[in-house]
Image (cartoon, rainbow, N blue to C red; front, side):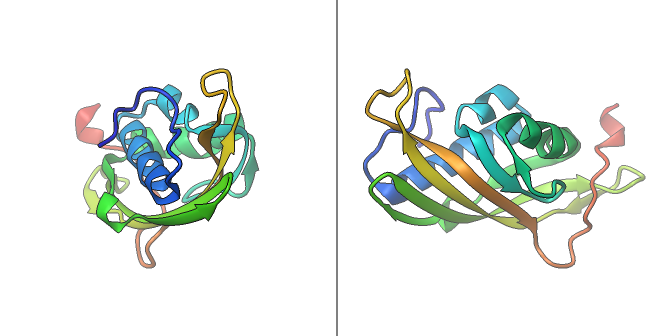
Length: 156
């Protein structure tokens, strides 16, 4: 179970991936950018359902998170689907996720996808022995899923 407090420091590579996805799931669902930032390296390189390749945490938030997180609902990673592994200071994980998107009229649609994360154990002030941070992520929608979500017009 995820506490969302403190750095991810386990020596178990699959457990690190599972905990990372649990924290990402909670951050995205709440559109909590600060919580999301805590599990990413500043020099992360990513691409996603909206962003082309971006390098750096600021560009990832501006070009992916801010265009998606407030415009979806019910985001959750299926933690039972997480598979991971690694060696030394490198770990990886894959998972499926689901959310609710909204068409131009505010009508909801099912918005499923899958994700990959590459984690690196980095020494930080919060974790002198190292904490797991994402250095690469790839989020994609399942084939056939509408590529855009416009937000829930009923809530505005």
